[in-house]
Amino acid sequence: MNTISIKQNPILSGCVDNLPASKSISNRVLILNALSGNRSTLGNLSDANDTQLMMKLIGTKEKTIDVEDAGTTMRFLTAYFSVTGQHKIITGTERMKERPIGILVDALRSLGAKIEYVQKEGYPPLEIKQFSGQKTGTLRIRGDVSSQFISALMMTAPTLPQGLSLILEGKVGSRPYIEMTSSLMKIFGVECAVREDQVNIPPARYHSAEFTVESDWSGASYWFAFAALAKEAEILLPRLSLSSLQGDSAIVKIMDHLGIQTSMEGDLVKLAKVESSKTLEWDFTHCPDLAQTVAVVCAAKGIEGYFTGLESLRIKETDRIAALQTELGKIGAKLLEENNTWILIPAKGLPEKASFNSYKDHRMAMAFAPLATRMDLDIENPRVVRKSYPKFWDDMHLLGFAIR
Figure 1 (tube, helix red, strand yellow):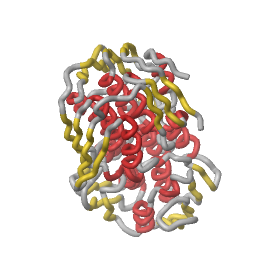
Figure 2 (cartoon, one colour; figure 1 turned 45 degrees about the horizontal axis):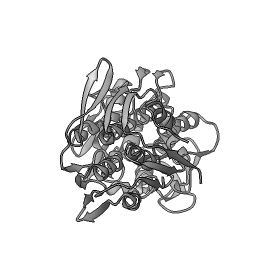
Figure 3 (cartoon, helix red, strand yellow; figure 1 turned 120 degrees about the vertical axis):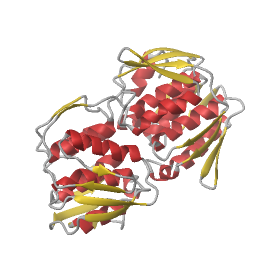
Figure 4 (cartoon, helix red, strand yellow; figure 1 turned 90 degrees about the horizontal axis):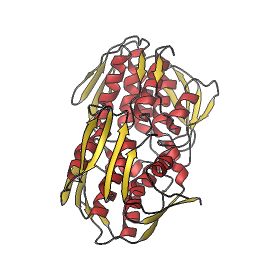
C-alpha cells in the first residue's frame, strides 16, 4: 500500500492557499441547479472527488452510474433520479454497499418511486425504475441516522404536486445541514419552514441563481488542529465566513478550549495560539465530522475529553470509532465508551515516530496528519484525501513540512 512520510515541523506560519470549497454546499447547489433547469451560475465549486462525481453523474444518460465512495452523491442522486422519474442503477464501492440507505428508499417508495435493491435488502446498489406520481404529502422519517436523507427529500419536495411535510422522529443529528439545505433552497426561490420536529415544503418552482461557494469548514478544521499542536503557529485561512451555514464552523468554539483564538484579518481567518483547557466536554451530534480531529488534538495535548453524539461515526467511510480506538492506541491514548459517552484518555508521552492507517477514510488521514507538528509520521493510502481535500498534502508542504 502507498504510504506518505512526513518529517516533524513544530513551527508553522503562512496561508493555506488550496483550502477547498465546501462540498456540502457544492453538492446541494448542483442538485438545486439541476432542478431549476441548469440555468444558474455557480462559482468556486469544490474540487473534491465527491463534487466532481456529482457534476459528472447528475446529467448523465448512462443507465448504470458509480458514485464510488461518495455518500452524499449516492443519497442526493437517489432522490433526484427517483422524483424526476429516471431509470438508473446506482452502485458504489464495497464500503458503500455496506452503508444503509433503507430509510431513504422507504420514504421515496411511500412517495411513489419504484426502487429495487439489486443485491442486499436495505443497501446499495439500487435500481430506480419509475415514479408513478405522488402518493402522499406527509412522511415520517428518523432524524438520528443521516441528515442527508432529510436534505435529499427536502430539495426534491417542491417539484411534487403536493409539496411535502417531513415529520422528524427522535433525536435529529447534524441539524445545521438541514438548515443549510433550507437556506440554499431559498436562494433558488423556494421557502420552507424548518421547525424542531417538522419541515414543511410547499409545491413551487425553483428559479436560477448566481451563487459562489465558500471554503469548507471541515477542511479548515485540520488547520485548527495543526495550530493547536504546533509549538508556534500563525495560520491564515481564505474564503471562510464566521457566520457560515456549515455545521463544522463549530470548530471555532471547540478550539477556544483547545488553545486557538480565531479572528479576522482582512478577508482571512487568522489562527493564533492561546492557553488551552485541561478538559473538553462536547456534543458532536451536529458536527460529527469534527470528532476525529478533536480526539487527536486532545490525545496529543494531554486534554481529557468527554464526547457525546458520536453514534453516526460507525456508518461513515469506515467505523470511525473503532478506527480511532486503534490508531490512538499507537500514541498511548484511549477512547472508551460508557453509556453513550466516549471518554478520551490522553497520551502521557508521544513517540518520536508513528505510522497510521487511513482505513480508506479521508478524515482519518487528515485527522492524524497534524501530529507531524510533534513527531515524524507515516500515513498509509494518502490518496484518500481526494474525496474532500485533493491538495491537502500540497498545503502541508507549503506550510513547511518535508513530505515524501
